[in-house]
Image 1 (cartoon, rainbow, N blue to C red):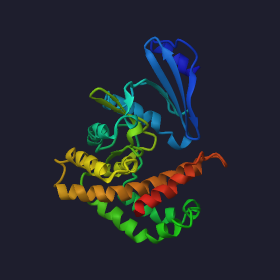
Image 2 (image 1 turned 120 degrees about the vertical axis):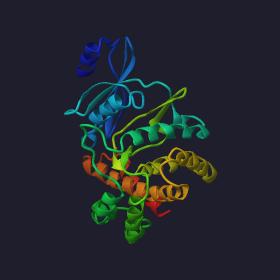
Image 3 (image 1 turned 135 degrees about the horizontal axis):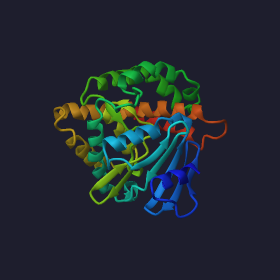
Image 4 (image 1 turned 60 degrees about the horizontal axis):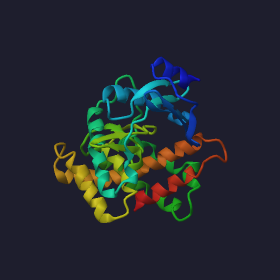
Amino acid sequence: RWMAAQREAAGTPALGQPTVSQLWAISARLRVETTDGRAFLKACARVFDAEPAMTETLHRTLPGAVPEVIAIDAAEGWLLMRDAGGVIMGEQPADTWPAAFPALAAIQRATSGGLDGIELEDRGPAALAASLPALLESPFVAAFPDDIGPRFRAAAPRLHDACGALASLPPGPTLMHGDFHPWNALRDGDRVVVIDWSDSAMGHPFMDLTNWFKRVGDPAARRAMLDVWLDGWADAAPRPALEEAARLGLVVGALHQVESYRRIVASLEPDTDWGLAGGGPSFARWALA
């Protein structure tokens, strides 16, 4: 009913009843055809309550960089958006994927001071270093498989040092997507829209490398993509510093993912994790590798 009322208020009423296009433990998404094209309503889990207001602010600040937001209900965690169009980059040839990097970099450069009116959590390297002992002692990490849990805990000094080293390297803090990968980028010609800002926070921008590169199995392709990424930040620092930030960003970004999955799993009702608990050990292995 809220979705229909917002469409009416926008002067583009729905042409039928909404249908469920996605439903799982951390979000639900409804789709409806309207007189002005397709619209989506995303209902976010409580652990991602900030997503609607943050996406709306990003839309106002950087039109076209994220989906066009029609309306939100922050209290309910509801986000109503126009269809961004285009194709999912992850379903296209991998050599086209780096076209998404300039889109994210433009958002990150524009948000080095945060977002007006939005209180963003600091999930940068220094904050991760401070929270590392609690993470490693948590029941979440205690439940990791025997082949990774002890090794991950034993790596605490190296993980702490990686956080400290990355915190000292450029570029400075920006908005971090938190779940940047080729299936969260839509391409329509030369335009790329970055979607799904559920796990965003302030942090080192190169921490967003992890989730993307974890999906690129070929080392040569990974190296070529990294060169494109670094070219987009060439004016921020000398190349050796950027290379080091990327190397450390892959490690610290993986640590950020472990902490993210800890929070997500802790927010779920028992026996409803939809396999999400496996994300923690997977990224712990990546951090060590």
